[in-house]
Length: 272
Image (tube, rainbow, N blue to C red; front, side, top):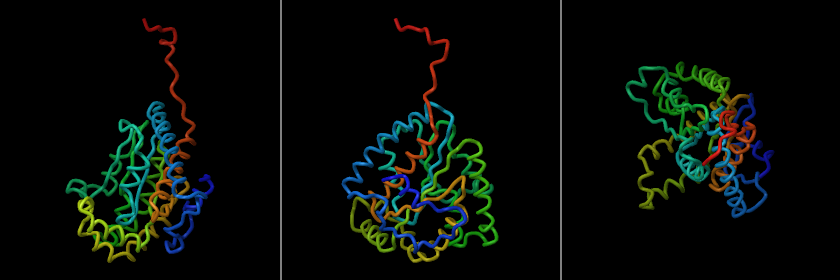
């Protein structure tokens, strides 16, 4: 997959997103077949592991990866497959669930800021601060006058992170309604997947249109030059993982990282 094809999934800042214009079955960014895609993903996994070690060793940059998507879009699967070879010493996965009483007593970004990556670290948000303009909107947990203000707050928050040395990469995993139905049905039929199923999955599926509208606003209003969104076709898991992996590897390569030199005091040292 050429980088230009990955950019095909970029939400260009200032453009209005209509999800029905984005095909969740699309695999046009890769010219080969599924098996060839998996082989490339294996190669990318090796390169990602090398770059993540370099990120940790250099200790100058921080990387935040945001994964969002409707139920069963594949956030967990993407994390397992794309990041399977990285060193857990320098990578964290953070999931944001219903806020605690303490978290509700603070602004909506308070709990998020505490989890952003430190220098040398890569953090993966499996769901994120965007839940506060998605779930709270669809379920009417706060007034519209509250959640509409949050788009600007999110953009300014991400700009702060970037200005302080964090690279932010955001992926919306775009799954089709029919494919979601198949995956949720599979969870009900396969005993090894019972644990994945939640009653809210069915309730939220009935709100498909409301969630799609909420995501369209998120992608339109918060894809910025400093923290753009990528809409990743996710009906084919191998292609989803390939797009995400390719973009992250390209992002890390672009940091032009170097291993730290040996301190001068050790340059004449010899091991006896």
